Image (cartoon, rainbow, N blue to C red):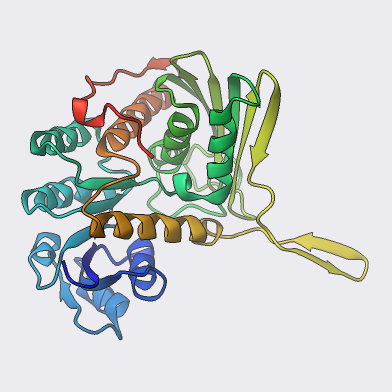
Length: 341
């Protein structure tokens, strides 16, 4: 491995282009060696001004480009399985954005492939684990000072949804973050999910069930509710409140600027997840680069990616049927027996 970790970034859309910028300008110890996107013009724009970067239409071809030592997968979810498995075949460490693989069968194939290697190569991009507020809440819950957790109340709002967004994507794209955050904060698996559909907002595109109310149950009796509203119209808001036997703690309120002028005061509301979680993404990618340069893998594992896919699929079934739906996980391989950071 050279002085700088050579990274191939797969996908040059909103997320991928931001990761190219992050690797070039923010993260230390790494450089962008290749960028791949079926839209090569978009890949070229993302790589503009960077020295020694090759541009590719094919993601797998980028893995074999000169200087590539690791892979950051930021392409659309359906393309993740092929890219991650190709990286495994080449022994390349991977940071894969969520969802790791949208369907649980494909996600389990990734788990099985890495388990056969007998070592971890992949970290999954659940960046909330790197957010300062979420980490403080995790530390507080693990310390036991508030007693046993009883409930988590979560809010997930977006200004608007992309044109291709479906009702199912509110769960398997948006709420997938809450799925992982709940598993991580509580140290418990989610065992059942119920999705309720209030009247859709007038601001939601025709046919989109937005907002939704999602209720998860855990293996030790904690209830986790999520209000997901992806066309709220006014800002990007993520909150989480843990209610425990001896107290409660809420995060998500204290990160905005308060502007006071004559006769009024106004608080900024972030308009984008890349604004609200900018620091978390920076910490996540820096941690991945640092661990990779030491020959290690840390953070959310492919098992976490698989578990999120299974829970999300159960949620989609509940959305369609209106019924409480159980979550059935495969047997967890020994490789993932230890709790992830």
